[in-house]
Image (tube, rainbow, N blue to C red):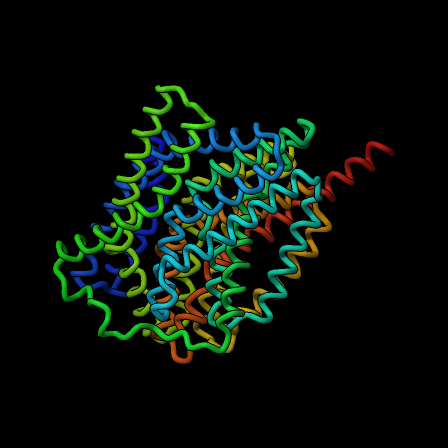
Length: 496
């Protein structure tokens, strides 16, 4: 539990301190109500997130191993594929980042694009591509060909989708994987790989399943954008929403708490019910494991409710207000600098990034150091956030001007690097764009877009998470190319 608390403090505390520094330096000052809610929200997040992570370790991880193992043991490809789709769908629908992200999009659209409809569309795409990713492993399709094909499909759909959906579609890449999806899907991918590969190939094949699932969510929203092209996507009337300022702290927190309890219940219950059914008929867990899972599920639920209540109570609103105030300064360098610092801090503070870096150093036998990867990711993400902010401040600078060359470069690199780097790179996109990207950096961009002349919250306010996700992909593919060149030189030196 101490380790979970440390991870949480490293993720949330740096952002909190930066906001307080900006507030007290008078660059942008939060009013007393918003500052109080921000601090109370941060406190709830610091309490809730370690509880959530502890609960996930006690229950979700074990459930993932059990259910994934049961699918693999069936030795039937159809069961593995269908089970992969169902698990992918369920874990994506339960991810906290997905709900934080989709709420922000739903708040800016018509009633027909509600929060849960958006979550279901994302989850359907995620589950579908998880199934295809498992089929790739079973059919022994090279990762380079598979990755290039899905990236090319993203590029093609991008050309035809409605402009309002481009940024939000690509943002889903970084919002779909987290503490719930990771243990389920990695266990499933490793299990399928162990049945179809030699032990030397197993590790390489288990990488990429998270990134492939995220691609599915992007594709699903792009298709939705094609279907809705030309249709009005207007925000709901102001009269329909209750102003947060009209409620005191207790009323506002209670309102958010009730909504969050419903949201978490709907998100977690399908996974728990599915596991209960599987446990009765196929898994047959030991009583000790079952008690641990039940207790862990309760802790997960309570932790997630407290954490999300903190996000909705003060974090989102304070971040958006900060962006609005910085946009009103009229000095472009201030929001650019602040955005870049936010990007830098989130990478260094994200525990999953350090785990990934150690993994890369181990897989490359020390040829690529974890410190090199860390600084590559940190500088890359800081640059990505800065460019995304610049895109908002200069509305003529469209998101497609960044996405098209990014996708073309990624497709080209797929044919130049070892397969293991492609899988690692696809997974890394979700790792670098952690919870703070959805809970703080995205609303910061929304605030900038709302108060920048010529900018739109729907068109320009989204897209920032996409580049936080895509920079690690390009960075790690580039490192894979460097590794291949180094390995080639070493081989030539030995031959000579």
